[in-house]
Length: 82
Image 1 (cartoon, rainbow, N blue to C red):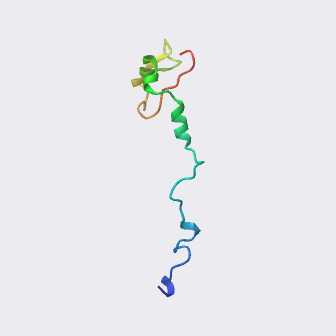
Image 2 (cartoon, rainbow, N blue to C red):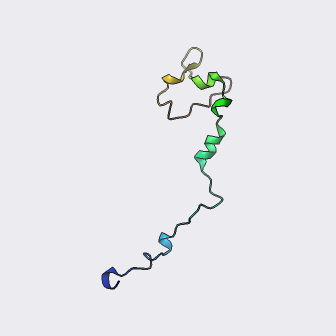
Image 3 (cartoon, rainbow, N blue to C red):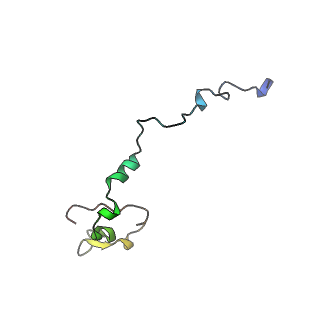
């Protein structure tokens, strides 16, 4: 093409548009690292699966279904001793 519609060097594959076809080997995903740190469901006690710690309840526990957004955020870690 010629004139005003002539392709520039960037459109022909300059450094601006070059993306690697795979990630570098040193790249880590922090959310994956956090997910691997928490216990899996079969490793948890039934008390931790179905109740969560709360300082306001009498026994410091309440049912997991009373926690807002309990399906979206993890509740798998509790304070030690509870």
